Image 1 (tube, one colour):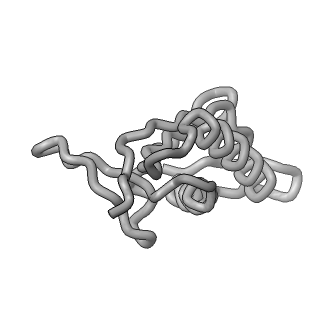
Image 2 (spheres, rainbow, N blue to C red):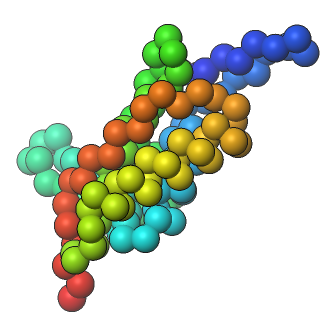
Length: 118
């Protein structure tokens, strides 16, 4: 599925995977984020996604007012989860609106797991 942007010069189509890739890259650069997470539907186990497969932990929905993004993340033990989530929301919203011109109405951050350093 893709997002269509109409202007005087023509029509631009932005694929949801592009939006998810930008959101994932921005989120993983925030302090305290270990990576994106995916839940195995068979047994419900959460696993850390590799950098090339990051968009699997992100859902992009198009609504009438703009786009909504759900980010499933894994955070580092000992960090303030509320501060991390606020940082992710603001950074992802700013970068997507700045780089794509799309209106981001909501960014939902779902912390799936906490990773303890070994």
